[in-house]
View 1 (cartoon, rainbow, N blue to C red):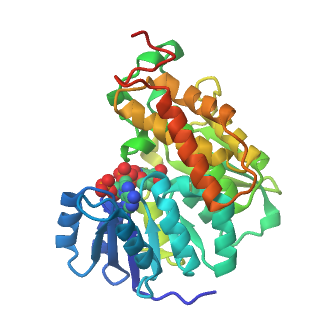
View 2 (view 1 turned 135 degrees about the vertical axis):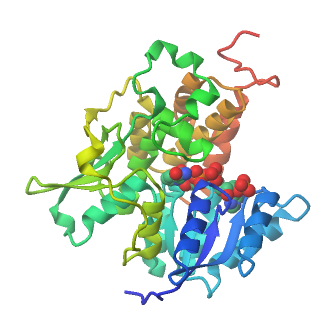
Amino acid sequence: MKSRPSLRRLALLGATGSIGRQVCDLVERYPSRLALHALVAGSDAAALEALARRYPEAHALLAHPAADDPDRAARAIDDLMRDPEVDLVVIAAAGSAALAPTLAALEAGKDIALATKEVLVMAGELVRERMRRHGSQIFPIDSEHSAIWQCLWGEKERAVRRLILTGSGGPFLRRPLETFGSVTIAEALAHPRWKMGPKITVDSATMMNKGLEVIEAHFLFDVPYQAIDVVVHPQSVVHSMVEFVDGSIKAQLGIPDMHLPIAVALGFPERLEGVTTAPDLATLGQLSFEALDLERYPAVALAREAGERGGTAPAVLNAANEEAVALFLKGQRRFDDIVPSVRRAMEAAPPARELTLSALVEADRWARARVRASVDGAGRLRSKLPA
Ligand SMILES: NC(=O)c1ccc[n+]([C@@H]2O[C@H](COP(=O)([O-])OP(=O)(O)OC[C@H]3O[C@@H](n4cnc5c(N)ncnc54)[C@H](OP(=O)(O)O)[C@@H]3O)[C@@H](O)[C@H]2O)c1
């Protein structure tokens, strides 16, 4: 095992986002344990500048600077991911943009605290191969995977029977199915429990997020798909569970606050003191669990199917979903067409001969173009909405 310094210097990809800002909060709260070596954002120069003023000692970089060569920016990010001064890379950039920096960090033997599940969904095999080859580790930030990770500490692999991911069901758990066609952007962004970035919030409303998490869990914990289940738990207090061969189930509980799983990953193998308050069991009221309704949430079965098919199918699923959600957020796609458009892309996707990075990038590009092509210049769905 690598020795880990007590002060951990972080390179943070996605610094201006919802997870990125919570990482910054923790750096401020635990200055003897965490420091920022580098901050990377996408294109929001003003937000990055504000952060750079707060952390003048950290390098600050934009992946898409307004007036610069994007290749130069990509090379600079690649260098940061490999910088010997960095102890832990935090990957919290939205979506597939995080893939190349993640692979660079793994190649440099860095440990990664990973929020961006899309990286594992798109390229789980490649990521696992890089980890094995370079001796790096991934510490999950996603609350469900953090919960499973914590339940597995000290357990033998052969003792695990199945992983049980919990999901709140999002804002539409009780909404009549026949009204899904009229869901507005504001309604989809109003998550009842978690405050997150827009893409993952829409994914929580379709529960594609849970589908992506099934694939993420498969690659993180090396467990077959048949041994990964999903259960609906509206209160979001039990963050996930592991069932063992003797019939025991271990669960991890906490208030719905991402600071906690982020701190578990940043502090590992130690716990940071007082990150959140623990839930008060006496006043919590009822904790309930219910079976997942696949008619309401077909995205979970679709994602599982992509995972089981393997190859480039998860990359197609992921890219088609990112694109469909982006179109929905621009008012150019109906909410109830997000998942069908991902399914159509998956059905039409050409099979890849070999699972290489370029095949994955090509599958990603193809799926985005395919989803975009179904919208006309005025932003109407060609196949569904009348002119
Ligand atoms: N938010 C949560 O509670 C939560 C929970 C679990 C997992 N996750 C996962 O964590 C990831 C981030 O989620 P989020 O909610 O924090 O997203 P977010 O609020 O939308 O933030 C995305 C971040 O990525 C940056 N970015 C965009 N393109 C980039 C690029 N090419 N290179 C580097 N940075 C880039 C953005 O910068 P600009 O501001 O400049 O665009 C922003 O800092 C997602 O994969 C999500 O599924 C999030």
